[in-house]
Length: 128
Image (cartoon, rainbow, N blue to C red; front, side, top):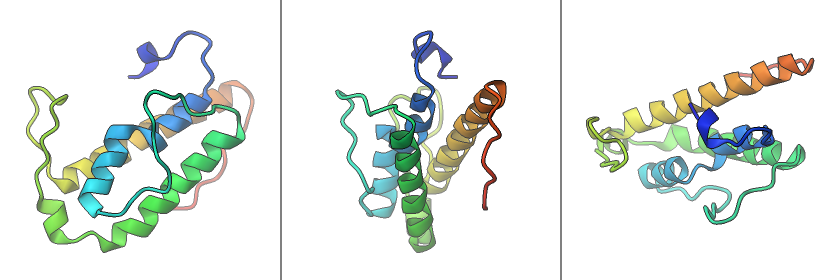
């Protein structure tokens, strides 16, 4: 969990920013597909966490992935990636990397939904 990475009282907009801009996932998705993401990520600069910016960034990220997924080839899905930070784990192929990104995004979405419900906000309906 990322709870330890966020200081107490940090803005929850950062929860939305993580799945859309995390440099490792965006870089891997770009490497897997060859299609450039809609925005650049500078790890030295924190992205804005006002209400509108993370929502816009997340929408752009989802639109990017939805537009690129149909063009992924079987060869791209079979390609193996070495992830140095994944110590003790097998090197994943493109399919496993994409699944990992989806699972991570679902994790953050669930955290955001819980946070909204605690604050008395009804989470948006999702179109799948």
